[in-house]
Amino acid sequence: KNEVEQSPQNLTAQEGEFITINCSYSVGISALHWLQQHPGGGIVSLFMLSSGKKKHGRLIATINIQEKHSSLHITASHPRDSAVYICAVNFGNEKLTFGTGTRLTIIP
Amino acid sequence: NAGVTQTPKFQVLKTGQSMTLQCAQDMNHNSMYWYRQDPGMGLRLIYYSASEGTTDKGEVPNGYNVSRLNKREFSLRLESAAPSQTSVYFCASSEQYNSPLHFGNGTRLTVT
Image (cartoon, rainbow over all chains, first blue to last red; front, side):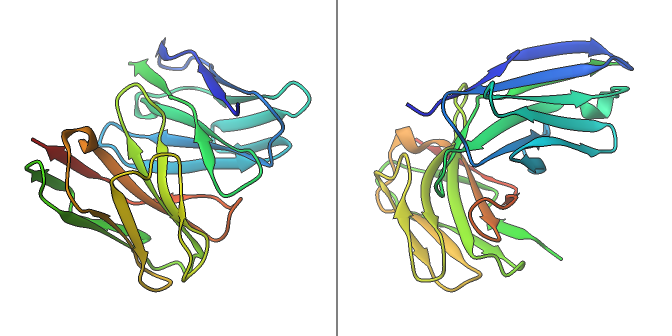
């Protein structure tokens, strides 16, 4: 069965800390997405990657195809980074499989 | 540039009532999707349309129908709402499969 697991489920950190959120999947994929869902409910696409590493501002996403694992890092975290971060995986067709999300809270 | 526009934002229905959720995108995307989001679960695909004129079932299609009216619009219809359909519904689009997703702001539906 094609599965996506995220860890941790919840993460609370102090402002300025380096944050890592993990995503593991069960079988080979064609692409992996990282999404951000703010408390208001809107969902924004952060990254789509199939190999290597991508960076946008303070956000970095990496993927290790052999280990079937991806990480999302946030450097110099800020309270406005507080959100739910969702990993979604494309197992080779039009349908994405979503993780249940990591709720991140950054305390000032 | 509006992106993906989804209406309504909130809706309360009684069991057995029908309604249509509307979604439109202005990015000339080929693929469009309807998802539902329930507490403690990941987003689940209800239906998708890989291109204008085609629709396919996703993971949880029972109780729903869709129409890809044209390239811009993809509607989701509940013919006879049930309490189990209480959820937050998101429409999304992408240029093609394996492209970044763009989401609407969601519809919070309550069925009593």
